[in-house]
Image (cartoon, rainbow, N blue to C red; front, side, top):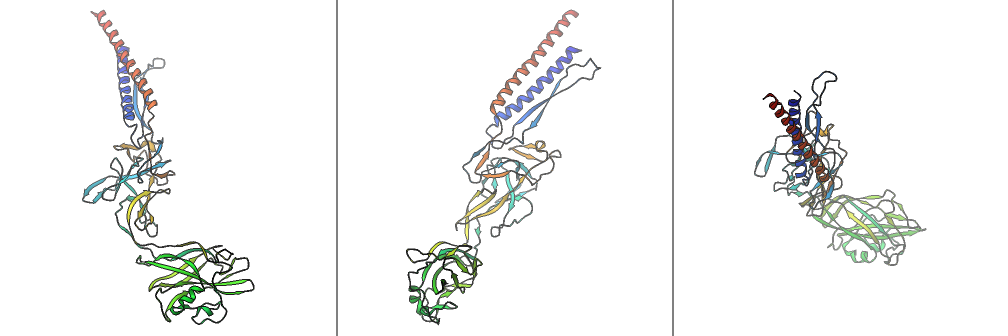
Length: 449
């Protein structure tokens, strides 16, 4: 029965090489598919049950092996919502079970993919080229805190970013050791800047605005925002109010009413004197910030605002002009704005760019990994489903999400062509075995005749 066994073995060889050829052709066909993972062929021999010394070479069985852990080359992409995973991990995605108008419903089934060519569709979902919807953890645009504890399908509507009121101003400046104005005149303070004392607890009335302006120095201005997003122009001025024994005292004022007249307050003292030593260093206050209580400009109340100048942010050194040199004045807060575009930042977050100039993180991209990655079930569109062999998804992937890049197919064409030649030759050899066995059977039939 050896001849017939040879025929059976040759048939299994033909089937195995055909199986390999199918995998090779699929790999070559997907050599340009984003995120594709090649499927390799593994051969196993089938040994006949025979006594010791009587064993014969048996047939062969071909099976597939995945290459999910082999990363493809990352290449630059033109779309800001394209993304790739550098390292281990898979994007968590889903497919809608039903779509009605702008609303899609999802069954809760999660799939996983390395294909990151996501783009924003008309309904605000990020969908890749194979039709899978990106999942992640949405963030509160105001606080940056996650709004869910588990991944959900991300949807970004062209909504407004709420206004954020100004609560602090970062400020750095150098006050001149020799002011260009006659900023200090000794005397007592009675709403008259020409007799302002070092205590400076008060305000400048409208009638004294011209005198105050001539005897103080411009400290810069910044656009702040109230809780409704209305712009508020905060103007600052410095006045030297005391100088004795190498110690110089300055007071900071902000404009409260740009049209004030008579006894109406035009400029308000911030309430904290700033003292500098003979070396130009700030000695008091030493906290690095002061609180400006109930800051109000032209009737628009910003509430309590913190002026942050930090260590070394305020100095008193000589300069050629005798004016205040403002090197930084940056308030927080912003007006409301409408989302205009999405992109992926270096932290793996999806950020929105708004019409008010703000760039705000809107969601974290979730990455999943598995203990048995190569046991994932392949799906159409370069996606995978979890299996009992792969285990449940673990949200502890060490890979990083890289924006504006895509992962290419991990297929190596040269390797596939060499395997194609081997499969072709092996198939021909198995066919030759069948031809030889047939000739032997024909010889046997001739003998019988």
